Length: 227
Figure 1 (cartoon, one colour):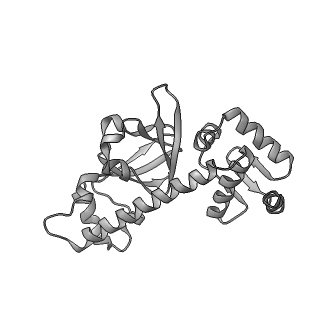
Figure 2 (cartoon, rainbow, N blue to C red):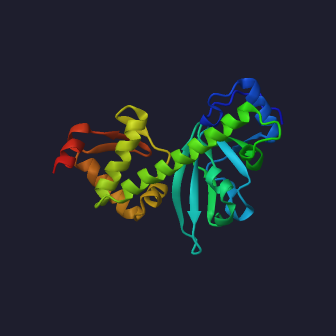
Figure 3 (tube, helix red, strand yellow):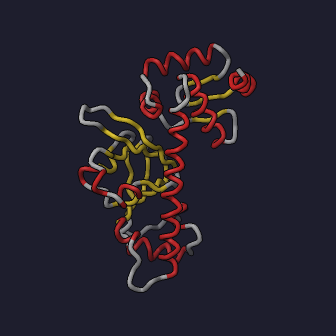
């Protein structure tokens, strides 16, 4: 399929548009749309694709043998997904990727991206360097998640996560991509307890929210850390 739109992603940083077109052709790239909660990839089928979120957001989820699911990472516009799983496909049976919102994604054959071609193209070398940097970034995201989860109380877990999201947005009012169940899974807590704590935090003036839209009140948050 011919890709007729400009693709902006860290995968292609420093690579010219004409070279990106060659990569698209080499990797059998295609663009697909997915409805919210629709399955994009499943580890049981193997992670042979590398994806890039063009619109919306996707969740990397672990499903255990009892049917419970846990959000590992959320990938938003421009971000790649599936790279670590494509590198180590033997340990991905319980992993899958779902659309967190209505989403449009670019899918490419991972093997064709991760192995330099016989021509030793300069842009392919740059591509491999970009992929390595992305793996490092994903690992850092997992470290951040561990920092949220390691907070001693549910309130501090939420404050840690919401403060990070606020920083990403660059404004005290922001929207998160996770619904309540996904947020509970991400932080490793009970959904009912999470919802109750959010209500208490709103009552105490720490936050305001409606659905996925949040506002952090800086002064009460700062005082919380000083206690």
